[in-house]
Image (tube, rainbow, N blue to C red):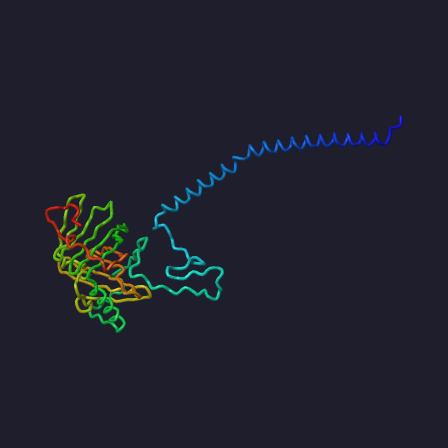
Length: 316
């Protein structure tokens, strides 16, 4: 049977339309499936964002509570402009940008962490002969140290003490010349030490004891003297210096208790007292390093009063 051209075209159109409907249905089904999948996956970015935010917040808290003592200064390749420097926008010519000028050092630098005391041997470099002579450089170093110590009227700061057994104690100290000093040790140490210009007492709050010594019989009197000339007023037995420190050893002999030494160490560049080491007659060394020094703060005079009937924490 022959089919006309019109019927052939109609059948072809109907076939094409049917195929298009099937293709459309398949596409709709795929769209619906994709839509459903996207609905199922929609909350996942929100969950990931929330977890990431929690981790970031946790890291921020950890960084916020890291003690400054654990932080180490790290040089940055492009430091931000300092206070007082002009900041240029990107629209301004590059030729206007100048290198930052060095800022003057602050009068007092706070250290986040205590220094590591240097444990010297005060018995080294001590001449065997009692007739000690010094060259011009050594005399100049001694004069520099004498001028610095004499210029101090008050001194407040922190300290690290290293005992003969290597144990470390920290605390605060207060000096008011002439003759007054107070050392307060951090917990758990129950020790405090006070000099009122005449006597030096060492208190133990835990044991409720108080030992009294004449200040004139302790090496601290050299640090607490109003004015001092080390070469004239003390028995200096050695003076050495290097790029970091000027070291001066003072020796004192006592017919009853024996020989003791005091080693003073000052910074070669700034001339400031950094630490001292006391060697007792038995040969045991105690080193005290000081830092965060403040010469402008005046302590309360009541801090240096000694109550010989009360062994608790002194006033102040």
